[in-house]
Length: 165
Image (cartoon, rainbow, N blue to C red; front, side, top):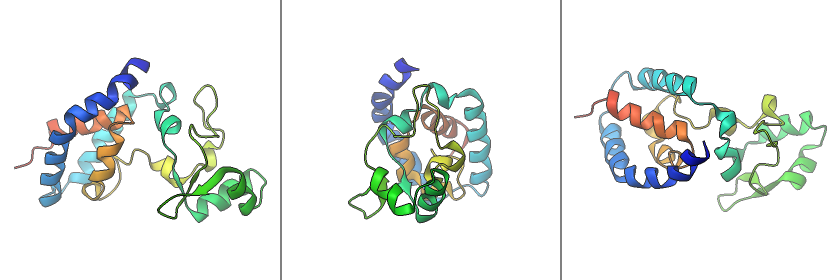
């Protein structure tokens, strides 16, 4: 997995223009069954990919924390929401709550999430390749292919299966 992660940013950069053109076409005329096809591709790729052998998302990026995330996680940690914010979060340039540091504080040495059952919504949905209205998050997907080997594979498989005119 380390070899794949070292190559991923370069591979993603090499494919960036190709992917951008593909997604531009996708936005203009998405297939009616796009979400169904994306769900299928996502499930097939994630049947092969072991996130615990990677955890690159947790090591290199931080999720946004919604107020609901903060309440849920604080309760789980037996903290008041403000204590959780003060201890773990900061406000970014977009005025969103994010982690004070990466890698994620809640990632252990074996790549397990210490708050997995109450993790933020952004973590539960990452890399968002099975999300409804996928064609609306293509800019996010372009970023995620450089971070997540599974997202990279999903996009490559998508280009093979979903022909655009």
